[in-house]
Amino acid sequence: MRRRARSERRGDARAGPGPGSDVRGAGATRPVADTKHVFISVCEESADLHAASLVRAARERLPQCAWHGLTGPRLRALGVETVYDFAAHAAMLSGILGVIGRARQALRAIEASWNRRRPDLVVLLDSPELHLRLATKARRLGIPVLYYIAPQTWAARAYRNRRIVRDIDRLACILPFEEAYFRAAAERRPGTAFRATYVGHPLFEALRQAAPAPGTLEMLRDRAAGRKIVALLPGSRRHVIRTMLPLQLEVLRRLRAAGRDVYAAISCVSADRRELIRDLLAAALPAFPPPAQPTATAPPDDGLADVGVDIVVDDNASLLTAADLVLVASGTAALHVAHYRKPMVVMYDAGRLLYWPHRLLGRFVIRAPHLSLVNILAQARVVPEFMPFIRDVAPLAAVAGQLLTDETWRQIMVRQIDEVVRPLEASDASVRVCELAAELLGLQRPA
Image (cartoon, rainbow, N blue to C red):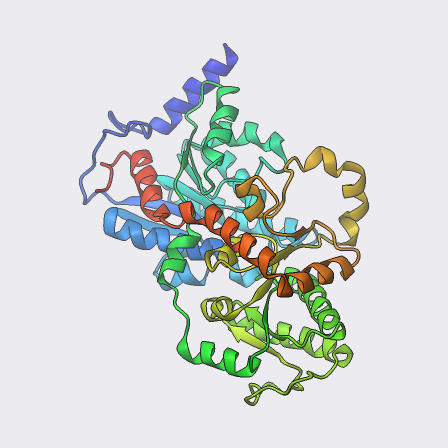
């Protein structure tokens, strides 16, 4: 009875003033002139990218909506009003220390914004550490919540499902199996407005529009001078780059020391990460043997010795088109590599502080048999994965060396990657999320 009463109070609060305004009634319509205020929140660069795609789609399909929120540079470029700027506080949610204070700052700014102007809808992307707290606050205020990019509780922290089902109205899932997983979680907790829907993966929307830059592609092939090209993708967050790039460079050094004269290029997601990557590369150079074969063209003018390692800024399309092998930090980037059907080794090191807690408790926390997205989707070990800790890079370097020369393995891996990624590539996630937003706002579904 108490659960039913809470559910009824929640329904009353979210119905809002006036008849016909129940946010769960998909058939209700509104005049175009009736502005709907939508609060959108992102804490990561990747979420900012996907949020920008969503806002662009919504402006065509839901012109009634005015957008404001916790933004990044891409949302601001679209004119979304900024309540709090995650880019100015880049450490937020990127580690344990320093997170709490910045998260509290963001929450205070958001609460003040909601007190001044209560939104008609809250849209949260990824980052459950902050956004599940925001979802709870929105529920208490009777504001409907659309959560885009579901928390990966199927891998770890399944206890969060209770909160997700309680506080979120619509969960937009980006992996095919997540819809059934979260619907099963909801069935165990009846009496809520929660519904999970698979919308497709937003990464592939962006990749459909990406094309190699002819100048970069030609430069990479000229610099390789016929050698195998190894692409290093160390991630986008600064703390991940600091951890992963030295490990990837050590793998490269071992390949060279074993007599494999490979050319390498490092992916740099944006110009503001270039200096960090350059410093890490400079620190590693003294240990590098000189290339057995000189490059055919001069290196970019970055003041570094020419050891056959370059930095490619904001052009993964060119880098991955040219690559023969990719060392990629675990995450969505593995799907990015899969889109180009490239053999890869997926790697991640969570750090020394978490090593022994993981050894003692990890099997109780991490439920998934595989940790890289390609293997999770395949439900099999399609690509080699070394995670969540890397104590010795020797096995990783050995596997990378084998992948450079074992053509049979390379062909099998590429075929299996294609089977995994092909069903995802027709994704139109932004349009599907617009439909969910229209439903929660009581608007007619967009055409």
